[in-house]
Length: 284
Image 1 (spheres, rainbow, N blue to C red):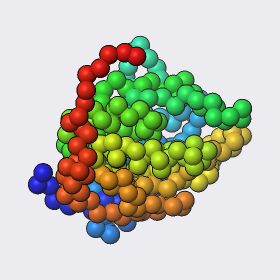
Image 2 (cartoon, rainbow, N blue to C red):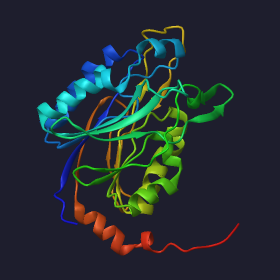
Image 3 (spheres, helix red, strand yellow):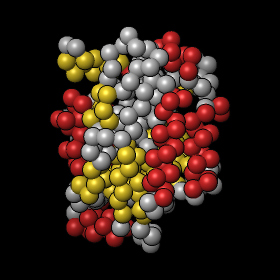
């Protein structure tokens, strides 16, 4: 492994339900990260908007080819000369048999080209409590393909709820990933209980760096003021291949910087080479 160290900037956002209002802050924080020396910048899940109203989604969301957030951030990556992970965008699709939207992550090269796309595999269909229920699959269709991307190092892509399915990350690591990206909009209930321990576990299990830019705070509903606002946990985290938290973004929008050392991946995997210790078994 002869990769150079990476300076990464994790962008933490508190987006509203209006993509036009969200884009200027996102662009400003990406520029801040690049200005502070980041050559790899990452944004969270739902970078363009958080809006649960289906009629408003139908009116606002665009196909990939005409999405203004994607076009602007590709231009920013080119102008700033950075590798950019757009954690995810809510997009229309051209799927003729399924009208649901895509929750799609993008890896953008320093020339603005799209290196990789990943559609979130696992849909957040849960009942956290009697008053807190989510049915992501009602509006979004799941992807069907795991993605290993050719970034500054090999990068395994994932989004938010994928974090609870460890076999995905093991498969990505065994395929060559040295960084795992987990852009997220974890709600404040499950985030407080599970966010840190799950991210640390995925790093420990794979010997990868885990980079998890997050949404934070109370999300404004400018377009649908009658809807109760949702809250996100924040705490964008960078976790070392040994499972140590090396950066925490706290609870406010901003940029968290971290330097990744390729030697740390080699060291962790040589100490605990569990990726090479699989056994074939029967049952249960």
